[in-house]
Length: 262
Image (tube, helix red, strand yellow):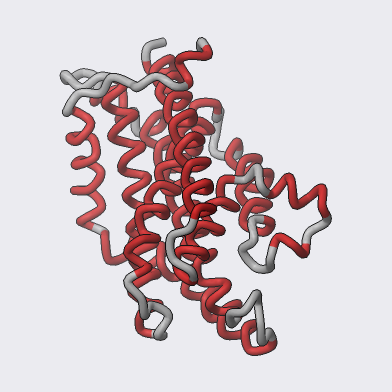
């Protein structure tokens, strides 16, 4: 893969929407169960950390603990759901179900398959975010139009982790392969990205490492949007996410296309 390929625009035909529609039609048959499990875990975290631990923490940078934690919960939900759909879901379709091989017997090509699957994983991550947002509204955590400004950032984060998940899928040899990416990347990221405590509490070296995590920028941008509104730093964080998404998207296109055309 040449350096310029990391920043090129993949050529995608309308067949990508058909791939997305196939996944959506299947999702519609089980949407109540699927959405219930997608939303259940974040809601448990909201109750345990936001209301439980939050009862013992009076101030987190001028806001209550649940106000501090809620933007991170939305970001973590987008990351987790998109990543697991991009790994376990796509790996199943790539290997065991042979879904991609079957689709390629039609006029739909590898690029359209990748584009449709990336968009679907991102959409599913965003569905999870919307589910948590609706539930949080009943707890009085959504009282501003600013949530509308935060949703595009969360969708961008879902896109990024759908691409990252697809990259790991292209290297996976079995389901156990995803243990390494989950334990080595996703879990540390969910703990050290300013989710449960401010980054200022970390040692200096670890703080710099945290800023290499895309989740750190998503949490910071979402938190700033919800509590301050648009700022220059929000733009910087979003730019980092855009660049990371663009690069990971091109890598995922390259890797899966190569795998499908073997």
